[in-house]
Length: 213
Image (cartoon, rainbow, N blue to C red):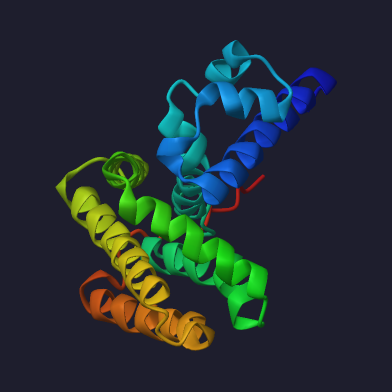
């Protein structure tokens, strides 16, 4: 990565982190793009260069996670199914839930604040659903773009969507957050097992045949 690209990436991350902090402190609808720009020490035009809409400031992390799930399937090794690659990436991503499980009180506050923001904002909920749909489309294309690929992509992201809804319901209800990460792992395993019976061999790639000289 060139120095120019590194600086652009750092600027983008600083803007996103600043926006997240302001949103969680004051609420999504109460923070303006101008305020984000001022706090991040950049111009309003710079913010819009990286994030064309205000919702983009909030959703960039979630979209990056979804893109990571697609990338895990795209780069899966020979012999690994699409389901196994997706499950591996989803379950190895601890994030805030892992910190909450470890007893991090600040992580619990942040997780609750983020989910409250989304629950209270129709714009953010709609953006979340669009992001999931976009990632499912990308996964379907990665798997070949036919009807089978579409079914598989929708099913896998359906598990992801169900787990998001579970976490949001539990964390906002303050329903034993210390056990939430373990419950998510267990329920994810059950959900993937439910799919696996009909998708066990889907998407396995063959190992490359050695070239004989």
